[in-house]
Image (cartoon, rainbow, N blue to C red; front, side, top):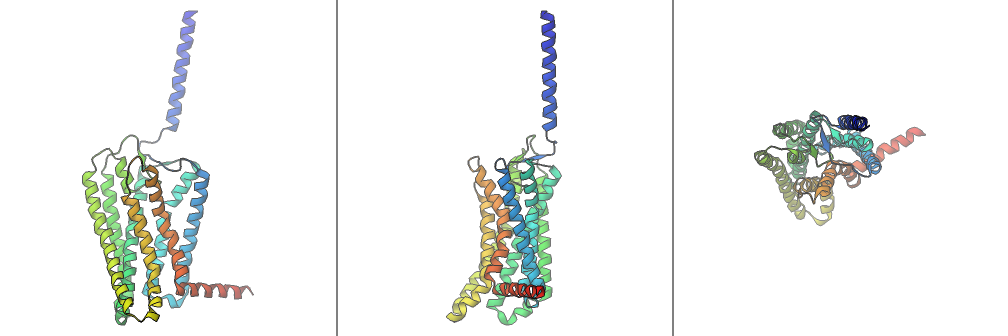
Length: 331
């Protein structure tokens, strides 16, 4: 009887171990998977908000782009750059928000190694290009207000085209440098990323190898691109403000309104970016880091079309004109 009991206990023990092994194997991630530490609670609310935000971003930016393409009076360098910014904002949000939306709906927070680095590459690329494009728009306002007689000569179609192409090339080179250096890292067996999507700093935190040299190189690279564009923007607006102060008081408001929308957009972009990449990264600031990164990924492309539609008289007039045409066609 004791022998039978012992045999039965051994059998049950082996069966339990096999059951545990199958459960672990079923739930185990691929060795190349990363685990995104987001959307642990309130997934239904997150899904609804993310879906709404993404739809608003698409509608807002595509509306601005369509208005500029339809209205012949908006065929100027400033609106050419604005149409490029609208398309860039659509790409900027599409890199991260759809995948975050799927993760929040399904509850599956895994992302494969290759998909993670593709997302990283394009997120850095679009973000870098947007900072360059905003700098070009600041220079456009500087020439228009501080040197209006030479505006058409300086800001010609060829120059604007080369500015956009140059922004694409510089943004891509910046993205590739970040991506390739991050790819050289060795990652731990437990690959947890403290973010809603794959970005440089969370990947550096997830690495097991020494990241000091890579962090230093990336910091220099970021300063060269981010700080240089920010200084150019600030220098442009210092000259713009000093020029506006010399104008007769009755014309100041109208002159400043032509660049106030862009100033708001630049401020939102740099503040959210600075807070996202320079906020304290510790266990105590776990959720602060996640939220700041999330806000940086959707707030600029969400606010840009709203700001330009509400504060830009030319865009508002063009939008009213299109709406009146559509109403007349109905009748």
